[in-house]
Image (cartoon, rainbow, N blue to C red):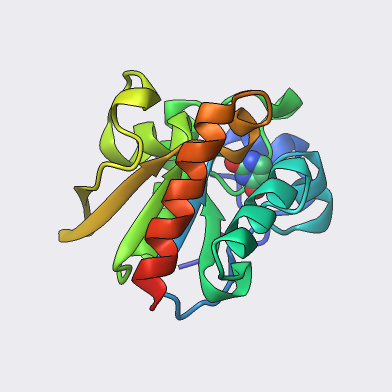
Length: 176
Ligand code: URA
């Protein structure tokens, strides 16, 4: 299920240039979920192609796989104004599309607080959950979920970078 090209389910439609649909291998069972498109993503219509995307792509390659081996998507498909966090209402409006992307996954990696909040309801500190596998319910199915730091948060924090590198090693093992 994909949004209508003229989707108006929430107010994010007002400021968008492009709806940002998933990128990578549409048949991959491993799916990375980010927060929301930023400026570059909005202009190119592809997730994680700006600064955060460069970090994400480089860290995947360091762990021995490529962004083409997985599917990459976001909790919302349109850019929030000024790159603010998406609201619960916006994430709820877009959830039907996210759920249809995730329903056959064998592992969902939630990048950052918004993705983890949207998919598990967890609102506490990321440090307590990062790299600890749990289960989420998507369209009535139990799916393994791995909370991870958002690539942008690793720029000035070495510990977060090490933890995201560990996330990538877990995914690399899963891809074998
Ligand atoms: N940050 C995200 O969470 N998603 C993107 O697509 C780009 C930056």
